[in-house]
Length: 118
Length: 106
Image (cartoon, rainbow over all chains, first blue to last red; front, side, top):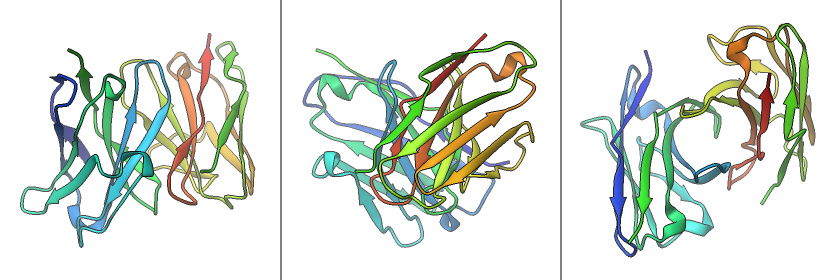
């Protein structure tokens, strides 16, 4: 069965970086894109970007360009999302999701809580 | 960016009811529309893609319709496990954008 297992919760201070991992299993990793979406406490969803594990093509939301890097490791079927220069309003649950059909996210990871606090 | 607006923002219903949630896009997105369910403390669960196609394993009590700018999600025969928050999402263009959610309460 398709599963996306994400790394655990992190607490960071303002200005630091965080790197969230997402391990895919149950399907051929390179056949599907991976998207990253975040959800601040009690808020809706915010799309951060997408990466194609087959060729590393990617697209980032303008809001995060310059601060985010998405990568994949095909040898371990893992996707990574690194966010730098963290601010308090970056505190959120970060999700990875499998992209089935050009932006249709059919499977989601369990989420990784990132808390930014001094 | 394409704005997605859901209505209502919250909805009260009873077990066995049939409910409809509406999602409107700020521009034509054809049928590039997905619906998700989210329960407190859980990850989203995909229900529908391409406006009206059920994801694998999703019961037929969930149905979607619409094209262009106006879309609906209908849930029939509400059961206790259906009480959750529902979101629409467009994937016609980047950045992908989401509705603000509709909280379905008993």
